Image 1: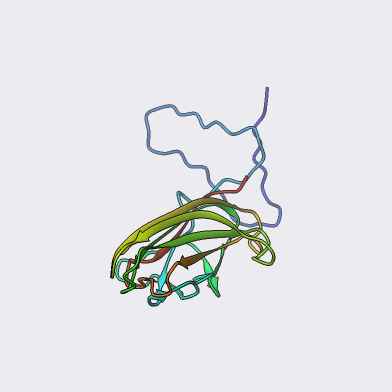
Image 2: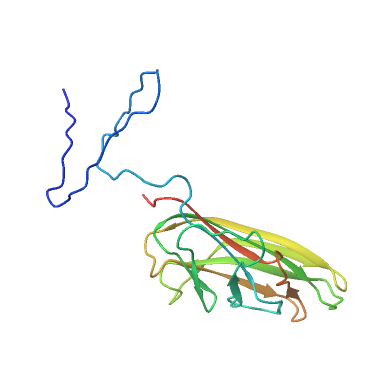
Length: 196
């Protein structure tokens, strides 16, 4: 028969108490057959969101003008992301859902053309290589025609110094732009769990 042992810490002076709830039902707590640490948080531990500081015209690889969302009802959980020169750094390892959205405008070009909004990732701090993790493309036709695109990816971050992401905009015409007004171009980061 397996045994359950509770071991104190010789250096500590606090008392830890296991307390039962007010219940008339018998319950069984089954321990997993593995070593580990009991989590002390419930649900998502990191959630963060960024927006542009203004409109961006033409090409931008990467898009660099990000700021943390600071409008009414803005929310953040945990440490949050950091961004420098358009490159987003993750605060800790884990599995993250990364999403981006933008509204683009032909801005008076008057000719059919395409615009791509890409989510790019790297394993070497963008030193030598990157890969497109998500792509949104819109074909703009006619003066002041608009399009909206979304991109997303699940990423596994095991090295916070080298695993990073960035967004880029590739425009067929230099007159195209993406909007930086509230809520029109955003990047959202949600940590879903540990990277196993």
